[in-house]
Image (cartoon, rainbow, N blue to C red; front, top):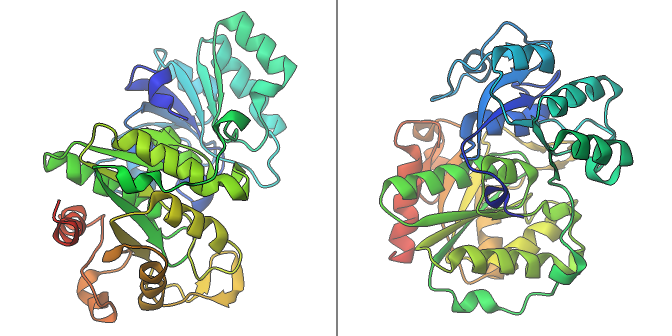
Length: 349
């Protein structure tokens, strides 16, 4: 999927993050507000944080004073020129919350397209299709899997691309792989490279990746092939391609998708994301988090790639001794550039 081709960015948008803005559950909304090159967030809907600003809630560099309001109706009053509603939370269980229907209807009636990360597909439901036709709006269900015609097994065609391919992997889920991928891409652009990037999750698609898929919706046999096709498409006219990874090779629940992305991307270099304060896996307390050193050894044994650097959530000055390669925090000044320098050194880009 390439949402960039469907819009003329930056698109003024409302981001729906009810009850989750600034939390891990609202990571899609957080990412869109902080990083999206596709959507320009003009208001965030979260009744539990109404009256605050996105900058106050997220406390990250570069986040502006986007107002947080209680409803889409309030958002439309605050920013009447918006053109899209981004559903930035996927509630547990996957269903559309009843409390959201009025908000979505209000946005569509006001002429907003809907970009949904829900597990249920609004575009497959007659009531929403009819409303879209009536209001002249569009529905994008970003979790929809690729069409059957686009599914194929990997055949190694990434071996022939001229661009440098850089994959971001990690020691666990939710350790900053998507953020690291985007910050590397942005640092490369600022350094003068013709860079592009590939997303493997819904947040990356909404942020504006040049190609993307929600990889957990792809049948296992075809995951490597789908990733391979996206990398080749983005690499056609670019110097360097950054690919978002998922999970970890040492993760007993999700290692299959990690390996498929590694083999599909077949990168020249890998940046490994790690949270040094985490010793048990997110949502899997029964499993310990393996060391970055072990994860890096596995990566290098399963692909013809070098783990160039570590992207850490910690203070590099305090945790650097624990790592056997360059380390930086992408939220620290100059952090993305230091990671990019390490990549360039091992790839001779």
